[in-house]
Every structure is written in C-alpha cells, then in structure tokens.
Length: 331
Image (cartoon, rainbow, N blue to C red; front, side, top):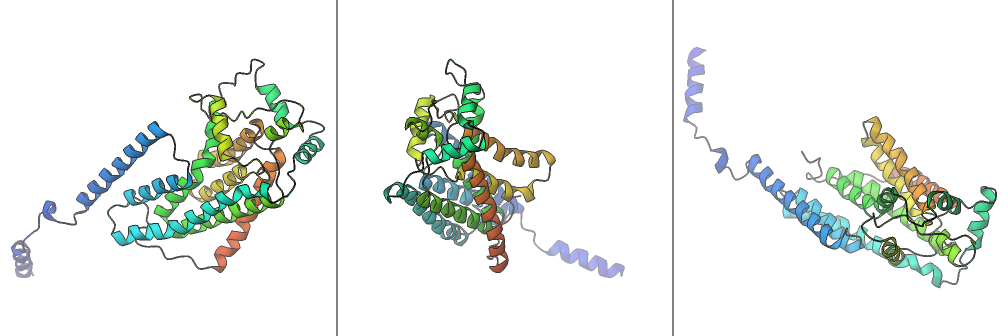
C-alpha cells in the first residue's frame, strides 16, 4: 500500500502543471474582463445620463438595456449575444406598435369623455374632486411647489424606466421568468390601448383647461426634480402623454405589475413594505399631480390584476422556454 502511494506521488509530480496565468480560460481572467466591461458600461451610461438625461425614447432605451445585458455577460459566446437580440427585437417592435397606436383614439371619431369622469369623481367623493382638494390643501398660496415635490417626481418617473430595467434584470437572471413578465407587460399595454380607443377619457388637467372643472388644476407631479423648471418638465410630459389615455391609468397598473414580479424575490420585510407602498405612492402622485382621477387609478389596478390572473393560466398552458446556459444569476 505504501509502495502504491509513492508511485502515485511520483506520477503526479511528473505531470507538467500549467500555470494559471497561462490558461486561456482561467476563471479569474474571465471575471476581470467581465468586470472591466461592466464598469465601462456603467461609466458610459452615467456620462450619457449626465449629458443627455435618462434614455426615454423606446428604441434608445432598449438599445442601452440590450447593451447592458451583453456587457454584464460579455464572457459568453457570440451565439448567446445574438440570442439576446432575437429575444428582444420582437418585444421592442410590439411596444413600438403600441406607442404609435396609442394616439389613434382621438382620430377615430370616438367622443372624448371630459365631463363624465368629473361627474363620477364628484358622485363618489360627495361633490369633491380629489385632485382639486389635494392641490388646494398641499400647494401653498404662493404657487411654489412644496419641497417633497422631488419625491413625487421620482415616483412618477419610475414608470418610464423601472418596468424595462426590471425586464433586463430578469432576462439575465432567467429567460423563463423574463418571458412570463414581458408577456404580462404586453398584455397589459394592449388592454390599456383597447380602452384608450373605445373609451377615450381626458385627465383632470385637461378637464380644467376645457371648463369641465371650474377650479385650476396644475400638472404638479414634479418631474423636474427641482433641477428643471416645472413649466419645462410639463412641456416634456405633454410631448410624451396622450390627452385621451387617462382611463385606465397604466402608470398605476404597472406599479402593480412590478410589485407582483418582485414580490417572490423580496425576502426582507422592508422590501415587501416598499412594494406595498410603491403603488400607493404612485396613486397619490397621479391624483395630486392632476394626471389621473381616482377612478383611473382603480381601473388601472383592476386591469393589472386581471392581466396577472389571465397570464398565470397562460403560463400553466404554455411550456416554459428553454433557458440558455448564460441565463444565470451573476455571481
């Protein structure tokens, strides 16, 4: 037995050992390259945001997200990166079709509901329009927005970024989970589009400018964060929004969708508390800011819940897509 162990020891010493630094596939070298590319991506994105602002255009934003997915898994083969483009291109096209179709409602001849939502709000809240009440009690007589407007601005702007960033994170983590989430995104978007076409409704600020609400209503969500004047950010919001797309509120709906997608991953109580507060904070921002009525928010929540329930049944019927080997949690 002792002789055998000595022979094995001699054989092991006789085998030439490759230096880790000379190994072409050494894990430490691959990690260094990946971290360097990740850092370069973060620096480039930060510089772009500082100079040009947050990417909000659909194609421009999607380009940054896809580039981020590739950057964070740069150590994979070109076939895996090509798979990223194949997966995201149909989704981006579908969302672009939604963006272009969202404004068709006011050209189909359907009557725009301007006074009806006001009447419903007054009936529910005993003659009061919550948007008017909130602005009268929370905006000082001087007209200057309160200091916490920066918080409502942050909450409002999450609708423009968080659902899509979450999609990119889920894609890196699990293609199957990403597929389920994006299925809900598309279904919810097109359910909202159907409402915009069949039941075009105006928001509170629009109703006030057309005399349906006698009291003045400001677009006070505070998108400028205190760095851009409210007038400037209001013009920007006007360029993004659809004047007849108030019912249902997709801003409110997507908060439910995001919270539901993150809920299984929220291990700490504080995280789950934040997910509960998020839809409430968005609802307050929308109503206080004059962007939506309470009934718009409730309709958005209802559409989100219905979408989740329908898609859960869809998930059970349709098999999950295969996940390539690069769809794993980044160590």
